Image (cartoon, rainbow over all chains, first blue to last red; front, side, top):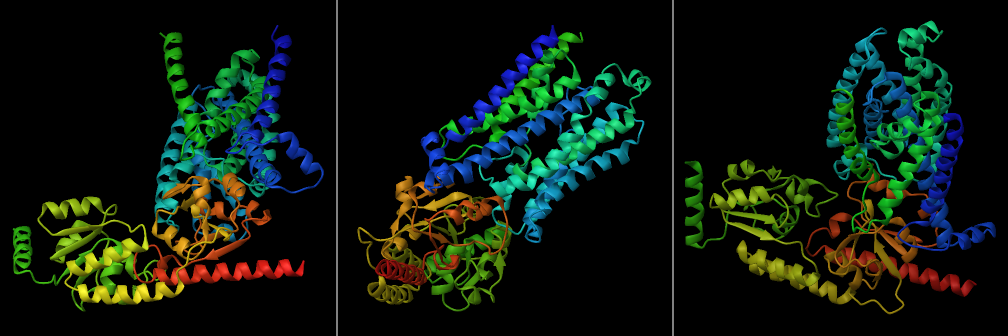
Length: 332
Length: 282
């Protein structure tokens, strides 16, 4: 049954990503014919519209797909690994660690040395957060301990971000604390896209191979171990992959919340509660959600541009409440 | 107890109708008026920003004066007989000082050269230096007479583009100076009369010939500032030019705004000349 239903849902999600991607290319403060602009591009003519399309909307839409997919994928992997409904890509502090290091590199001028320092710093921050969690919990700790350690690291990183931004030389920096906690896609360029791509892809590849082990793990750690899964190694492989992908994403657009939390929950029933299938589905779902949010941000008329993370939080936070109500019903 | 003594001292000073002798300012722009007009030794304190060469035109004069950070405690310690403040900055401080009985005078940010004149006169009256103020205005007006103009219908177009996409419209000091320098301000086409945000797409659409860069702090980094370095701005035909105006010349009112006007006018004339030359060549 699920085997037959799977392709339909996958097809629907893929279709949505493609359709939304094209909608994202056409939506903006100014409307113009996408078709005509593409023809101009093919004829190698340059106009305002081709510039807006290629330099502004294309990177924005592509980054939305990539970051959304990263968040969905990492969220699904984390939830599969930690078998906790509250798990999200940022639960072990990788998002806030990445944000902290990016803030330090950006605001204190180190990115002038090399633009590659930014994604590297994002990854390094995410990795450091995870290494700290490891140092705190060791190899054989319970999931609750790991999550608690993550909460602590998150809190420390958040405090340090505020401190770093507070001390930053740029007079505009303080206003941007929101960027690092909510995320924003409106200023990304093709350069940003190329910088984030390599590490993102490595992270994705590392996660894709984890599906089978996650399936085994859903039967419990001991069962998984008896089936030949090295649980400790799986843990650190997923943590590392998340650090790579989420680190690059956060360094580029800031931390966008709730996608990695909500999407796996929404899609789980559709893939028959199978962690392996959830990975790919969540990647697509994450891309859909971020594209939708970013399109909405541009369609909602407001004098001051809305930040995309505000919208995902507005949608995601009520979902959190729903999750609590549902859990309470299930566990009387 | 000390507050009461200070407060009554203030009142006595006013009754005596003598010019204030210990003037405190908690706003960069009232600092500038004060540094320009006040008699030597009558300024008790100015803001720390006034000692920064990038934001303060009279920073050299401010170097010898104790600075404050807009905190009520700092101001009270100077026992001022007049406190000058902006409409929007350090509001808690000014409220508190008013409650304590200090004479607090608020200045709004001037929105035109005409308002700069009015503010100079008001400041002159407040600190007993009206004559000084009139002299400054006379020199300023004489210079303005020589350089101020009005944009022709086909004048080149300009837009201020500050970090975060902020732009300034006609109804502002900066807008007035752009107008008097003979530029057409494109902020109007983006629907901005006073202050507003213009995204990159809109900037490409209204395509001003030149952008004004008036950096707050050189070589600093933030996402707001990154917007000005977006690669798309290097690829588009318009905006073609960047006119850099030092911030200290026009963030506050004062005779130095004429310097900003002159620089803007020079930039316009150079650009117009280049345009004519390139037309002749082709």
